[in-house]
Image (cartoon, rainbow, N blue to C red; front, side, top):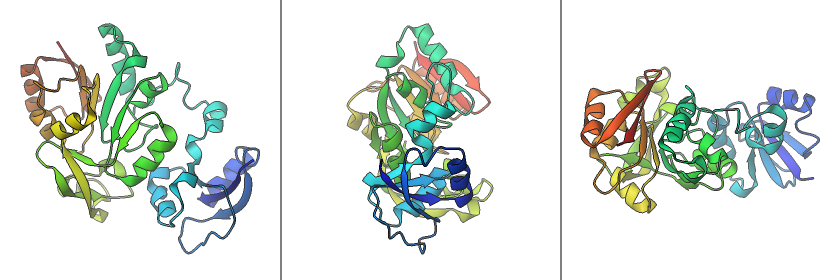
Amino acid sequence: MQKAVLIGDRGFIDEMTKAGYITPYFDVVGVHDLQPEDEIREDYDVCVLVSKNPLLDMPHVVSRGISRRKIRNFLYLDILHKELGYGTPQERFFGQNLEDAVLVKLFQELGMPLESLRYIEIGTNEPIFGNNSFYFYEHGASGILVDPLPEVAIMASMARPRDRMLTAAVSGTKSGSVSFFVDYNNTAVASLHDKWTKGFRGGDNAKSVEVRCFHINELLQKAGFVPDLLLVDAEGEDENIILNLDYEQFSPKVIIVESLNPRVINHLREKKYRFYCNIANVNAIFYRE
């Protein structure tokens, strides 16, 4: 049994301990708060983040200088998947608005088996919960996850080791080093556009960080394959990506994009894509004729 230091919300740690999800699997040698002044002195094999919002709290763990090879995310552990029913691929979908369920139906109609699909997901954020590509990963598909936040890369390596992770932003007009605006209380709206992030509640706390950025065509060239499924959730940059993608060179079979702008819909129709559906007035799905 691995010697583990638990770090996170003590109330949640106590709750999970009483429920029997910790001590049968770890030899707990220490419990610590997220604050960096709560110094870890114990000798341990793994550091387990026990948090209801691991993406929010992961930076506190990383900032301590803990080896990334030793960090574990409690919510991604197989013991929870088995005992709490997370990740049962035949029955559970993960998309916030069941986008993945709709995509499964479309691929069935197109006669494309899920296990052989290759995807590129722009703006991964949380790699499992609320994610539109994880269902396909669970069924044997794989691809590239792209997100500029290093915490996402750590969590993706735990949850989806078959996937390739690229820590970068994606744009339809920019490349190189760019400013990226992040509110760590709501990383789902992190964006290349400060007005976008600040337009959400609490967005006034957003900070600007420098990140690497690929132009969409540069990204697809770097990928080395044309994805069967391109997922675009770039928080204010979605339209630029769709409008500037080189469809002559790169033509994904299916595209899901967080935009219902008529310019996007008309542009994709001009590029020989059919509009499949609108989901919750948030995402639009298209497929190549």
